[in-house]
Image 1 (cartoon, rainbow, N blue to C red):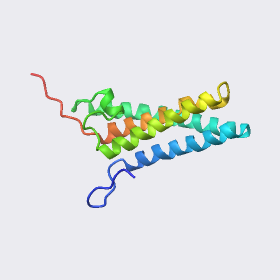
Image 2 (image 1 turned 135 degrees about the vertical axis):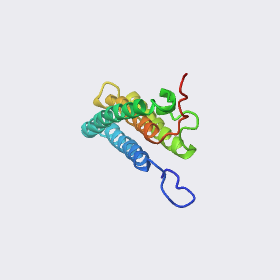
Image 3 (image 1 turned 180 degrees about the vertical axis):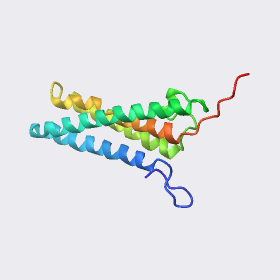
Image 4 (image 1 turned 60 degrees about the vertical axis):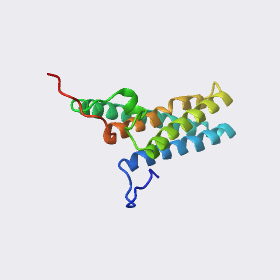
Length: 150
């Protein structure tokens, strides 16, 4: 899923990419079902809240790892979380940011279709996709070495 290299080996952080898309799929399916049937609102609500909670944890893990790496490497928030520049291979960047974008689109669409319901909590779910992109960036991203000041 992350773009297998020439030797057929999975790239670093493949589990993070897979988890990102599994969360996106769960959000999409449960949000669609909740939009169709009011009886399933609670399932979509629970999934969105779980994604927000998991995303919050992943965000803090990514932040802690980025702080640790910043002692020896030049990191920036945009490069860690949005994989800006050459931090990640293009397939990884496309997959992680694509997952985040799909989550945003699903959340906004569902909140627009069913405002003032528990489905509107889905707007919190994209924290998950963004945080996993940040976790990938903090763990596996390629950053330039920090030059010691004299």
